[in-house]
Each structure stands twice: as structure tokens, then as C-alpha cells.
Length: 345
Image (cartoon, rainbow, N blue to C red):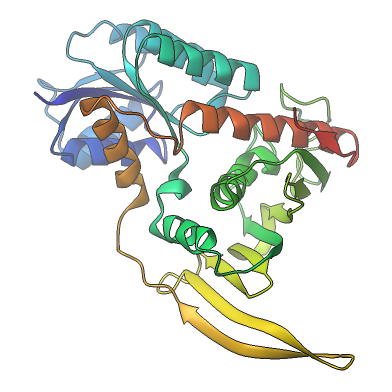
């Protein structure tokens, strides 16, 4: 019997959930919900949906009691996640939620505990954790090829889209946070953030005391091992970059998403000391081969397999999502306090 799936929210990203669950061999898409009728019409036309088999609705309340539903995908704005996910879990549905799980660390923990108490799957779509380049990068890291880790850095910049509900920190940082935590196998104990506001000085997020939505953010992560990473985020930058690097004593691991044919490289090299001079040695560049796979399909498939086998995965779980939101909350506090270093408890 196929898993009956309902998708809530079919904006830019939600449409891809519809596509994946329509074509997955073990699922049946039974309902789509979106407040905007034009988005429902778009889905119906794009995927030639059979209205006799798939219910289209503008409100969750209209389909929440459908007997054909066993799992729900939440791809609505993050501010709506908590009540929707909580209600879905209380209804007995498995949940796949778009990141972030919620905007509040306490709510994230509550939802994760609720899912565990009801023995339901709660998976969060941190898509990069299912990217072949990120997964292979983890293997390189754990194999110790970089030697003693020195530091890391990442850049995530572009010219639009500009969000009107959250700042560049909440819009962009979670991707690189997730990758770094996954590669390092640890989470920051302290964080620091500074930023600039240009476009929307009069707007404020409900989760921040700072006026204005930051267009540029520089943040630093301090890990318990002593490793530090700096991340540059901006949605007002013509130089589009999606690049993350971890530097070690024996080489650097680079994930550059803009290099679609060779996104993951290992640049080997170290210093040999000759007197007072340090001479680079054994320098080479290795393109790491990757198996082609759509990361979002891997997310959807992991969700289905976890349900069908009654198994749990530590990758992108509710606990992982809660930790990331806690880090973002600490960075938000630091940003509001002009860069004060904040401890993550």
C-alpha cells in the first residue's frame, strides 16, 4: 500500500515536493493545500492532476481529516510551521517540514518530543545534507585527509531575492551551518554576528529586537574543538557565490556549488620548514567524483524509507533542526547587540 501524502504550500519550493511525491514509487499524492488558488491551478496544469484522486484546497482545515493521508509535507512560510506541524503530529501524521523547523528553539524541541512520543517520523528538509557533494565531503573529513583542522569560511551571496519576513541571516545562514556541523561532527558553543541594513530599515522580525532586516551579515562560529568558521551572507551582492572551505594542515576541502561539473575538490599541500622559511610541498588538486542524484529526491526518499522501515536517521532529524535554530537564535541576539559574542547553551 502506498503512503498517502498531502503537501501544504506550493510556492517556489513546494512545487518540487509535489513533483517528487507524484513520481515516487511508494507514495500517492492525495491532497495539495495553498492559500493562493492560482498556485493550485498552476500545479493542476503543470502536472495534469486528476481532481478525482487529488484534493485541492485553500485551507488545511479542509483536508486535515482525510482518511487517505498518512504523511504531511509542510512547505509554508516558517512563521506558520509550529501550529501546522503540531496539529499534523497530533492527528497522527508523519511530517516532512521545510527548513527551518520553526523560528523558536523551544518550539522545535517540543515538536521533536511530540513526534517521538507518538512514534511518528519528523524529518526536516535541510537539503544540503542530502547533496552528494556534502555527503562525500563528510567522508573526506572523517578520513582525516585534511590533517589538523585550522579554520573554515563560507560565502553565500547574490542579488535578490530579498525577503520581507526574515533577514539575510535567517534566509541564508542555515545552509552553511548545517554543512559545517555535519562535516565537523560538532556544534558551536559560541557565536558572533555583525550586519548592515540598507533596503528595509523600518521592518523588524518578530523574533528580533533589532530594527531593520539585515541585508549583509558577517558571522563567526566557535566550536568546542577550537575550530572557528566565518560566514559572509548578503542578498545585495552582484557577485553570486555559493562556496564553503575547510582548511587543514595537509589540505583544504572546497565545496563550490557554482562549479556544477566539479563542485567538490581537495587541494592537498603542506609546509616544509627550511631554516626560517616555509616551503609548500606535495601540492595537488583532486576533483572528487560524485554519483549524480537530486538532493530533494533523496530527502523525500529518506522520509518514505524511515516510515516504511520504522527506522530513524540522525541526518536532518528534529533534534538536528532544533540545534540549528538555537544557533540562529544566538546569532540573532549577537546581531542585535552589535556583535557581542553569545554562548550557545
